[in-house]
Image (tube, rainbow, N blue to C red; front, side, top):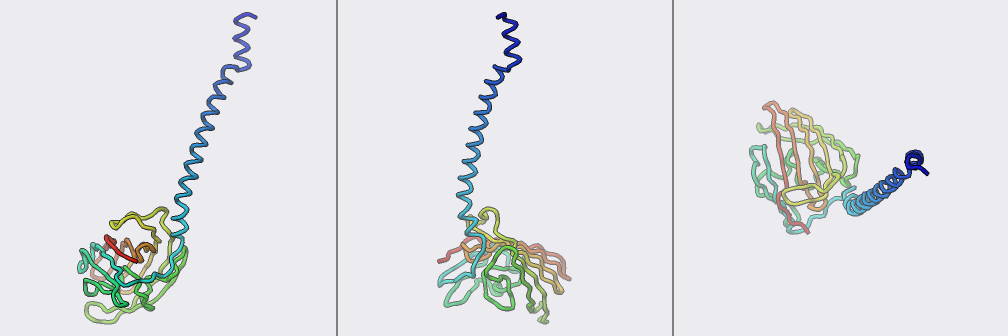
Length: 217
């Protein structure tokens, strides 16, 4: 067999390219296995979080539970504010901090001010009406609608650490309009982050709240 004929047979039948293709196929196969194993392992670690964060039951507060929140943009409550559960009720280091419509922190279980509607589950919606006294002491009413968006894809990074969290969005309408997004965590039995935009006759404000320290049983 002449050299030219042998080379032509190699070209026609693709002997050399075929060997290369098999090698590439083997490499691609190994890459596919590695990717599959990586995704499988990642899913195994993510599953407990996903199951844990799917919904949240009403928290049970215990004696000595405490939280420290940092607030920006509110004016009166800017800085650190502490809340503690003592003798069956909540106490705050700042008078008036608890129960404010914008600064949502713990579940006060107030039938009128339903910042939460437990159990929290994705897609859940509710509406309510609550009263408020303005700075002049006049009673006003606000209509509110809220919706549970659902758990965050991954644990939420906060100043107090990584926690599971469920996102809630709320809109209040009265003389002032509030649009809030806050993240409740079953781990801390509280809101861990909140942003609110306030549009009132006096102007517009942007308020932020974040949990920076907590101790719960």
